[in-house]
Image (cartoon, rainbow, N blue to C red):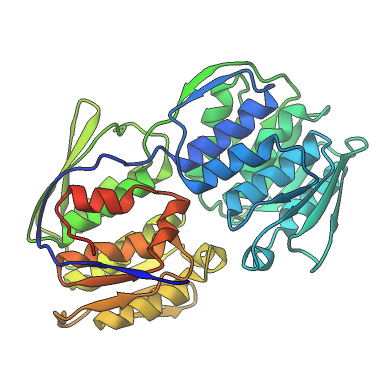
Length: 406
């Protein structure tokens, strides 16, 4: 049964987050690489997010039917992993997952020699993965703007293929930082991908055992930047976070600098305080799409007019995030219009002070992206448990910096 929580308005916040999660993106890649290296590595500080717990559970599960639920990364990474390791599995998920395309990845794996069948709708899960009889090709071609998870999935299995793999990306490359993140993690496990322009070359070689510690998640950190940006007075400390992170969402610092947040790094933590903000912003989310649901509510509530690009991939996430943003931003009087791949945000002219109720659409980022509005008025969040997907301690951390939740 659906329920909700009420976050009481608090315009003055301070304190430290205590449950900021480890990076889900790094954790999920490390789990795949550990499995490919024989499960002999030591991976520390894994994310406690549901997606990572699910990956841990499923990657070595002996069952024939593997339910990835609503975890897109898990679905994509395991599709390639099971194919490369010759495991005969049926990969399925939620009804929403069955609407999320996987054709480009399956086509690439089939071109390389994998046997994969669709069990319901062509191009979508569920699939039956049978594996490779032999490697038929040593190169694949994909659009550069395809989900980076497809590319990362292929990169990670490449060393296991007898002929190695060359991945040719056509056109503009989207989410390049996630590709570079995958390459950095592979280096930790003893394999060095060669990235030259739009070509990624990875030889057949053995992964090595290693010890790897996962750093805190910059996507999760972004919500505290939003809280500081919207509050009247604020100082929030984020512990155990890297100034020189390989995560693409480290760009949160530059983005939020424009929206009114100053970041000071001290030892292994970041201290967030308020500063003046710009009246307009142009931003390309191609390399950091997960930050859109953090930044747009801030702009809407602070009266910042925004012009945004690189948001196309938001339509095939946990929900259609473009439509969800348009619907929920309208509740505070803002408008998000699209014209040929460019989105224009017309902010709220006047913020109403009464309580608003935010629908979350089974999407963790909708819940956390709109929760910072509680610096301005009472906010009701429907189905708040969706945060368990990536940040199980989020509501506790809201309390840690001064919010009352009932």
